[in-house]
Length: 262
Length: 285
Image (cartoon, rainbow over all chains, first blue to last red; front, side):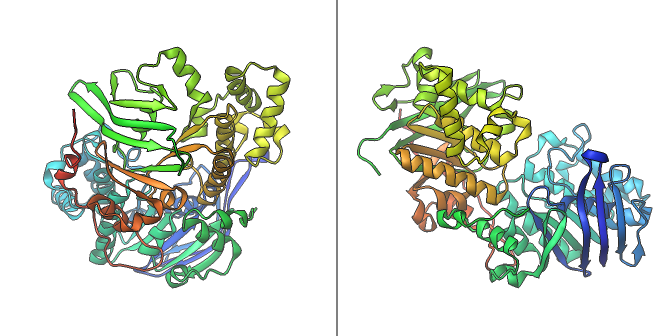
């Protein structure tokens, strides 16, 4: 479904040059949930943005990307690609227009893609994310963080996509709300046969959602594994092992053995 | 953990007057703190940060603090004037905030900021303050203390910024540290390294720590004792090691809705909030 080879992303010039992604390769099957894991600055979000074509004019992107048989040229994306591939952003407070109602937010992508029956689609999308029609004419500040993230998911669904790129979809939410949103995402994936690419720093969330994952560090993939290896705590690289140990909680002895990976 | 508690809090209330009515952020919280690590956990809006701030009298304008008793080592904090509170803040009880980006002065060198924290509370000379500052930077495991001393906050990483905050809060040698989500903005490995620094200093100096966090697993593994807050009240208290035997349905619900790293499940149990939890603790007048 998604195949990336030799992806390089470079921001800036001269002494401000930053090589965010280096020679990255990824292969994601149709219907899979694929995790991209790493610490801040590892380049995981940049990979999503490069895939979605959001780096035009921001960074230099080179490499080969193929999505569902379509070969992507630079950061140009066809209208059809933009309908088939949607993204959900991290911060539900920042990614919804504060002066647009939920109805406007949801109908905009449908209008852009010249879809029919826009009103039906809006009501249906809301229903699918567990919000009743009374939410249609509210503003983002009138609903909670979890409800906003549901609206973001509904906005992604409205164009009937095949691939959804999820950039830390629950990290701004309380754990009880996180559980609701994760359940919602799992159900939608089953119902619509979606393919997910999930960026997260939370290994437990990735273990719950994904079948396979890549661990990134300094712009490169250091390890690719399936979820069983993660659950069995059998990563092969020292970096991933340390990340896993750190995810298990505070252990004074283990911390002394931490290494710096540069 | 020790004999005489450092801090006694009894029936603490914090309320705010808003245009739409009175919001009760903290409703009758009571606890004692010894020379130990006490965790306060809860979700956003549970009143955990407000509890920490109210101890130091840091209540935003429009807010009110009431308590039956609020005592630090024999000093009544309820009746203390601003002058006494200024001495207590930093010297006896200090606070580490969440984000070093916003809590450090961007136009003052790191060394000068830490020195200031020392000079405010000690009658001493610059030379000694400088030496103590460098010593402190080394104590929080900053390798090039001399370089960092001269650096400005934007020149250091998040993890180092948070170690600098710890150094600044530790230098007046307080008895109690209140840490409000001190490492939530950091990557997980850096977070643990910073906590290890804090942990070592607290046990070496025999201090008390109030660790405010939303992260149940972290608190359970880091602290000695835990208070679980919901709707401005403490709904459960337990030893950190016994959190997995927690009985309150809210605590159980929180523990269950965390995705597990070790085994998969089709659906996460969601937390069903019972309105009775909000009135479960009797508010005595």
